[in-house]
Length: 85
Image (cartoon, one colour):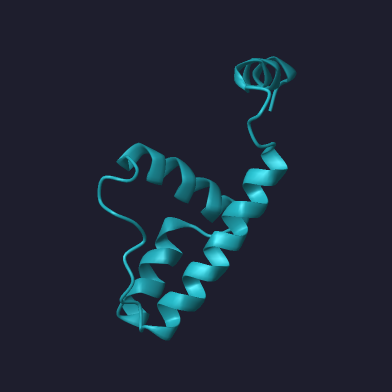
């Protein structure tokens, strides 16, 4: 990321906002908890209420999550087909 982009993002952050590291830790913990609970219920656990986030919020987050673990959308589709989820 360019220093110009980082500077503009830092300028938008409010003093009491969580840091990037805090958000990453919370997201990782939420993903592990959700995966564990969903597996225990055979996948029958909605991620959240349909009006809790926007489609854009989901796309931005899922894209970052896939990149973080070096997965492509194709691999996700194959896993969904093989697992029946």
